[in-house]
Image (cartoon, rainbow, N blue to C red; front, side, top):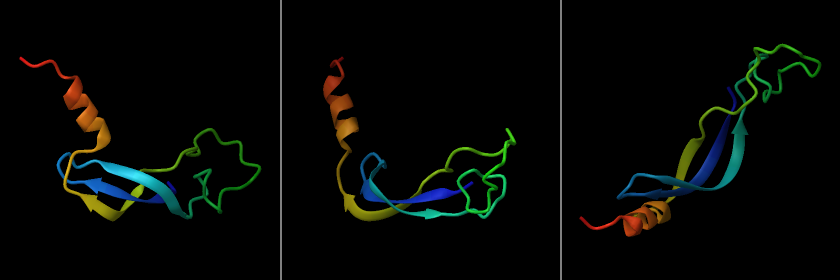
Length: 80
């Protein structure tokens, strides 16, 4: 499966990764992956993989806090 190399921020407190952009595509060189350069253009095989695999996460910034989604979820919690 081909994979995207994504650059982004790692949030230390929750561990989430926030992707800023996809910097490159890593080709798997498989004829059974529709995203690969080696996949035949006229292929009609239903067993070929149509999607990218998990992103390769390249951390370009680290923040010692929770991400925006985790902070919003914590703010919505009803105090017990």
